[in-house]
Length: 586
Image 1 (cartoon, helix red, strand yellow):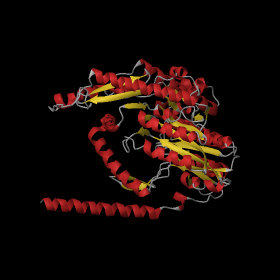
Image 2 (cartoon, rainbow, N blue to C red):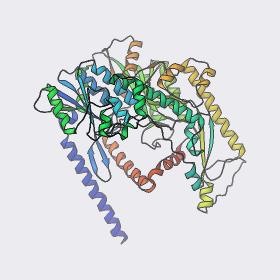
Image 3 (cartoon, rainbow, N blue to C red):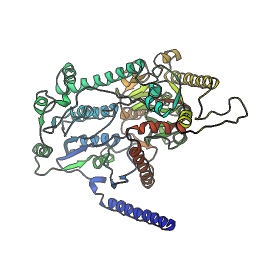
Image 4 (tube, one colour):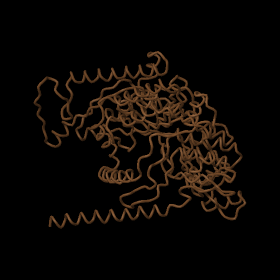
């Protein structure tokens, strides 16, 4: 029976491997020109279909994988592809306009803003934008408000109801499990630890979230009002009327949409605008792949864009969301760029909520050495907070989007005590034998008063070092940095006012600034991105493994999986952290 079971499992593995391999090969064979690159034809329309999460960087995987449904073409779009597609659409005489659809799109405020700002530039070309969604979230509507024609389904909704940040608190769950998380921190605004020590939001955290939500809302409401040619007070008044629950008749009176129609009617309207008998659409990926044709790099000078995306880690592969900045890997990239004589300047694209304080310091050191050799410019994405700001501090110049979340200059340490869970819940006890009084701390007893004092002192030392790094990088007094630190999160607009960033702008602005610092005229340089994409087959098998793990965790824990992710990360995380946990979903 044992042998039969073993043979059965072995055969199942072989059959499933052959099945997925055949499926994979079949998908490769079916890749059409439209999914790789395609030449535009007169009166073509850029079909900008953004129907999933917008990532910072292009994916190495041409396919997505699901344990239940197998392989499928990876249709997700990254910010770079979206921007490049719009760039080409603007200058390509064959492209008549853009058909925008953002159903199921999700992104952070700074990403929405970057796309929105690119649309503003695009419209100066005189070309049109048509937007249609079955329903609009706030962020999706923010983009759609740029359209010349804005349509929604006949029974669709517009969620113009203001902004909300929901923070889960796990203290009650941890109490039920008899797990005590021992907290050590500096800064009353350092709220990353709150969900594990409190059951409700602190006044300080409520204040800072309220401030940056208001700042983000004001930017978006002002832009929407300008595009609709109404006063911003009107947009604020609508936000108090539960727009997302309005009937179609009520929505029609608000002026938020031009018409409520069915999706199939949109193409007919676009045909009337192009004068063609058939709809000719070209995908964003296909158009973006023509970028070098329309924007050739005539110059020999190279500007490197180095992406730093995800949690900052001391141990490889420990991030819970699959995105990570493993410090030995990125330091190796930094040193290579430093030594590469062909690279004249480096733009560091930071999109990180922070992480390990130790790892952040190692990256900081490598970046300071690079900065001493060639210009270092930082471009902040959705987040450059805590450790993300730490690694941004050495830059010669810092760009941020108005809605970037940055700052959060603070430090904390967390050590869980599982003795209650092990002893009182499971009946497992632990006995120590040690050579010295302190010995080694572990997760199955609480820290002693002496140990707690030592850890708190270590956290305070790291915070003082963090302040010093920021003060040095920003050419400010440490006391001035301390006033705006304490773990406080700022938007890019507020960070500009208090000196944490130098200018508001996106990645392209940072690259152009780097070129000006080198005295290079536009078009006389080319941009190369780092790190280079991983091998697609390696990414494939990693995706298959990750998918199985995530599905199992979701099946067992459901909505409580976030708590498991946190506890799992503690197993490999450094004791002292510089990170931000709050997110703004739109």
